[in-house]
Length: 354
Image 1 (spheres, rainbow, N blue to C red):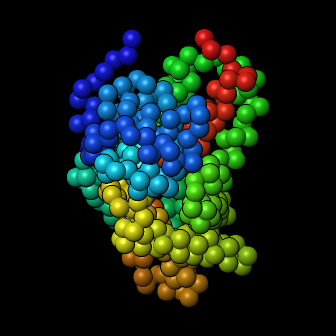
Image 2: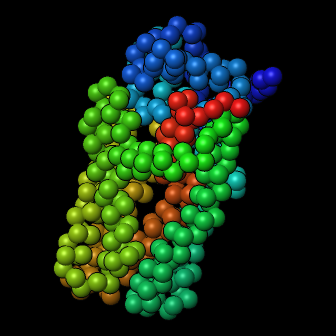
Image 3: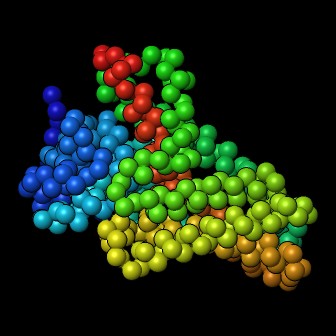
C-alpha cells in the first residue's frame, strides 16, 4: 500500500520546486515532451506523484534522470506549474536520498551551510600553505598529491555507497529481478550515456546544448587526466602542456556561455536557477581559468612571485573536489549515467518481475 506524505510538497520546495501544485492535470506537458511514449506519461506522472507525496514511488523511479530539461513542458504549461523545474528539483531531492552522509540535502536546502563549507575549505588551504612555509615547490607537490587522494577518497567513501543506495532504490525495491549476466552485457549503456549523454539528443531543439555538454565532458575528463596523471603543472613535455591549455580553454569558453545563459534567463532551463546551479557553473569556469593561468605563470616564470594564483587555483580545486563534486550538481552527471544503465537492466525483454 502506497504511503502518502502530506508534507512532501513543503520539503520539495526547499529543493527549488515552488509551483508544481498549480498543475491541474491538463496533459500539455506530456503532449509536447519528446520523451513521452504510449506507455509513459512523461512528465505528468511525476507531477502527480509529487503532488500526492508518494515518496517511495519517486525513490524507485529513474525517470527524473531521463529528463534533460529542454524546457518545452514549462513553456507550454498554462498554469505556470513549471514541470521542468520540478524534474530538476526531484533530481536534487533524489541526490539527497542517495547520499548516505546527508550533506547533499543540507547543502541543497541551506545556502549558509554551503558557504560555511566553502569558507572552511579556504581556511584549510591557507593553513596548508602556512604549514609548508609558503614554499611554491612544496605547495605544487602536495597539491598534486591532494588531487589524487581526493579523487580516490570521494569515489570510495562517497560515490560507491551512494550508487549502491541508488541501485537498491531503483532496481531492488522496484521488484525487478535482473539476471546476473545482464549487469555485464548492459555495461555499454553506462559508458555510452556517461560520455555522450546521448539521451539529450532526443529532446527537440536541444542539439547545440548537447554538443556543448559533450565537449565539456571530454574537456573536463581530459583535463583531469592531464593534471593528475600527466602532472601538467610539473611537466616539460610540450605536447602535454599544449593539450592542457586547450582543455582548460574549452572548459572556460563553454562555461562562460552557461553563465551567460543563466544571467540572461532567456531559456526555461536558466529561468529559475538555484544556488547549486550557480556554484556548479562558476566553479567549473574558475577551474578552467585558474588552471590555464597557473600553467601560463609557470611558462613565463612568474609563478614564484605570484604564489597567490596557485593558492587561488588550489582553493577552487579543493572546494570543487570536496563539496561540489561529491555533494553538489556534479553528481547529476554520474547518477544520470547510472540511471540509464539501470533502465537498461530493468528492460522487460530480459528482466523478470518478482
